[in-house]
Image 1 (cartoon, rainbow, N blue to C red):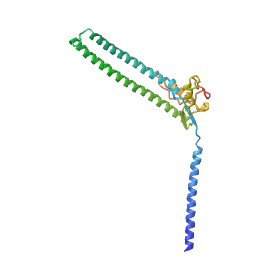
Image 2: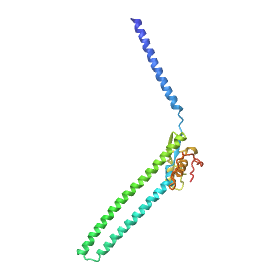
Image 3: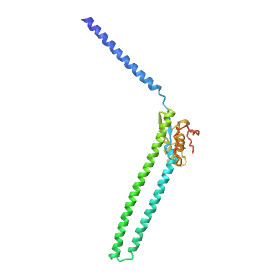
Image 4: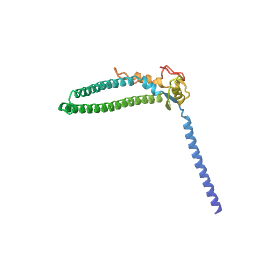
Length: 224
């Protein structure tokens, strides 16, 4: 009976060692696979891309033209209100003519306020749509670029020089998350070049893959 118990104990211990060996082997394989992935980090200045992307500028100019037309209409409505107010001065308060102008003034003022609110809401919505459209195009290009050149992570950063003349901007610059980077880590110009080459409103866009920019910035400098 004692021998049977001893044999059973040996078998159980052997089974535990086998389980531990399999677990260790699996963890070792997972660790090896993780180490085999070479991490490559890229940086992009989104503000620089937005500022220099031709399509973004064109869309904002179109919106600006619409706003100017709206302002012209609002100005005409305001002048109409002023004209009615001036006419009211020529009539005795409470007279039929005065009351008619007063009613006209109230309607004109109501129309003006409604127009102003609708226009403001409409332009804010259009501006948001422009930013969303450009942001999605930029991130899509970044994704393509990262896949082609094997980047595993793309981070935002500010590629401009520190402004030593403005204390506030200097402090903001010193608080940047990226303290040092290699020139090849900055993919801003490559992404921007691809976007501008793809945006051809007169003849349609190009579908060429994004390529590395031939002009590489040196660390801490900005190419304009």
